[in-house]
Length: 113
Image 1 (tube, helix red, strand yellow):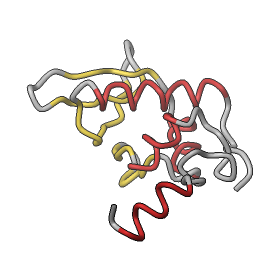
Image 2 (cartoon, helix red, strand yellow):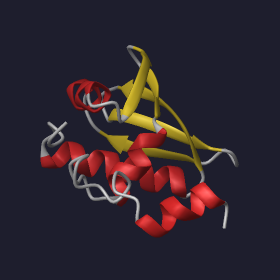
Image 3 (tube, helix red, strand yellow):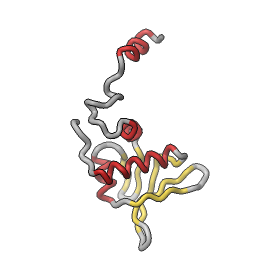
Image 4 (tube, one colour):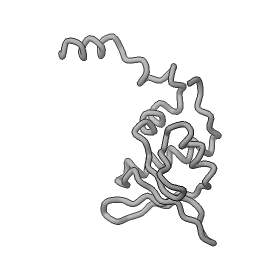
């Protein structure tokens, strides 16, 4: 995969979702739509919620790239891959720091040192 096929606002959406996850929300989310809000809700273990505005086409684009997993029409979860992609600022998989481990890391993993 060369580049992620996402618009800037979809990348910003994923960054916001990952930030909420790192603040204590779980990876699972529910989609909501009413007269005042259209988007997703992530729920933290302490009961607090974070609402993020988006539409279903944004979620579908993130799902297509494997960054979230839609489990039903109105729910899903952030994938572990999303954390790496956000950390790499959406670098292509070929240019990703996660895709190019250093020789030191490789020998450490091989020799266990």
